[in-house]
Amino acid sequence: MSPAEFANRRIPATVVTGFLGSGKTTLINHILHKENGKKIAVIVNEFGEISIDGQLVVRDDQAELVEFNNGCLCCTVRGDLIDTLQRLHDRTDDLAGILIETTGLADPAPVASTFFVADEVKSSIKLDAFVTLVDAVNIDTNLEQSAEAVEQVAFSDIILINKVDLVDAERLKAVEARIRSLNPLARIHFTRDSQIDIDKIIGVGAFDLVQKLEVDPTFLDDHEHEHDDEVGSFILEESRPIDLNLFSIWLNSIAQARGQDLYRTKGIFHARGFRQRIVFQSVRMLTTMRQDRPWTDDEPRTSQFVVIGKNLDREEFADGLKRCVAS
Picture 1 (tube, rainbow, N blue to C red):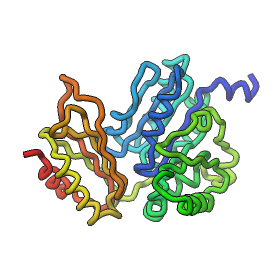
Picture 2 (tube, rainbow, N blue to C red; picture 1 turned 30 degrees about the vertical axis):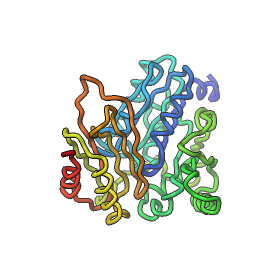
Picture 3 (cartoon, one colour; picture 1 turned 90 degrees about the vertical axis):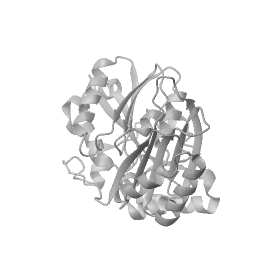
Picture 4 (tube, rainbow, N blue to C red; picture 1 turned 180 degrees about the vertical axis):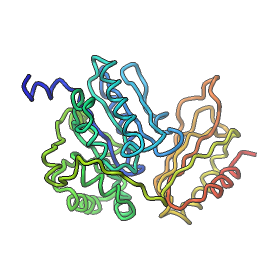
């Protein structure tokens, strides 16, 4: 078999990166919705004890979801990733592709090296592209505060400048220039709500190992990735219904006081006055809240609220959430 024939028969894997709140899960859902019959496996890696993003991924007969929320793919659970990739290949004959959504704090290089140093992976699965989402509103702050955000942009093959509807044309040019200063070779697309033609990011063969080695000759070495000890996450749970007005007022006060340290919050709420689950997301000072599907009869109506940030006090947030319980 020629090298070209060998490459073509391997399952393509697309790694989706991007800093916290950039729109990765929204992109995953968009891709799954547009696949039209192709069987896709999705691997979701969450920075936290409970997978909120995994609960929000669209599920149908054509998608298989694997969740990792016991560590980061770039360090503590790389062995789990290798086992999962091999298991997906062995079990599924008609798999059209694998999507891997990393945490917002993942270093892309160790994830990429998995496809080249693990024999059980490189013989059956090919790394097709690293797709990185960039938050057009918060990119400057993210790059300044996080080495991982810089690495994600610099390492990417395809960059989606997302949330373009929230900035003006002049700001968009500045964002593109900032990205080009870090990565002059990546393909750039501009997106709103992570909407893009899937043919531009899947099956594109954009990952170039030779090019990566030219930039970083130690790329395939086994580097240990360490996260900033000051950055952490915790989850709060509450079985009593939440008053969304009280919650919005409280979280807004926290964001005003600790906005630079509060990177990301997200949750699924059991809210007073709603039969549906309420999905809440915030990225620094930007927040969204929407009604999701109704609670099922056999489903515990429990609110789960994930907080990710720097030097945050869990007890402070736990006390605040308790004050938002509906009277």
